[in-house]
Image 1 (cartoon, one colour):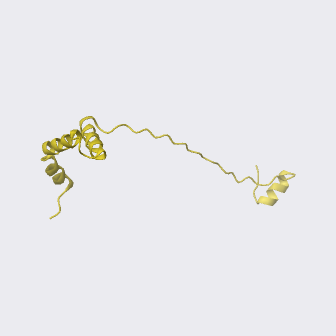
Image 2: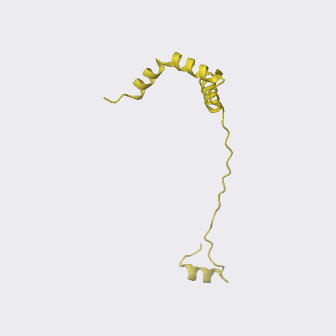
Image 3: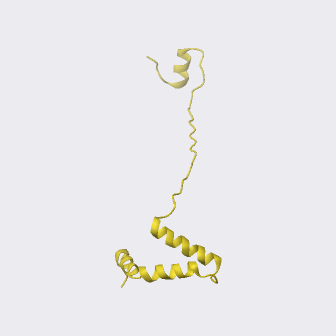
Length: 87
């Protein structure tokens, strides 16, 4: 039967001590690959202090397009061209 996210979280938390000890052992093991040591250190820091803040800057450009009718010589001509009456 499939586990719910809450059940999975609970099962994972039961292994927290062992996982932290494993990460710490990898982090300080001189013969471990550099990438594994860095990954372990990052995982420990993320769990202890939270992930580093990420700032994102974005630029939003808005362009407005207006449908402007052609210029007419007179109000009467505009009304005739556009089928509207100006009051």
